[in-house]
Length: 95
Image (cartoon, rainbow, N blue to C red; front, side, top):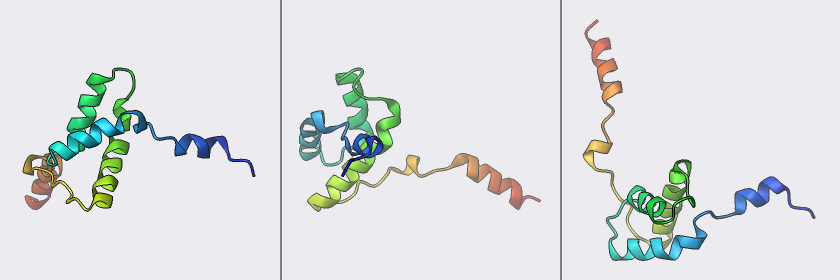
């Protein structure tokens, strides 16, 4: 059976090379958000990661936390606001 090129590309883990370092950071500071660690990796290993990989890394961290039985990190209150949506809803209420 021949594996398609697309499947083999999708199966590669772009974070494998530095995952142990990331895992150690999460072990030492469980409150760290995946975005902060990803930004650190981008600075520490320039050219290895692209901005578009952030969401993939966040999913990887969420899955790892679930497998380890760790609680998910709650987003801080400023991350939960949607000002553009709020402004629009206010306009609709004033009609």
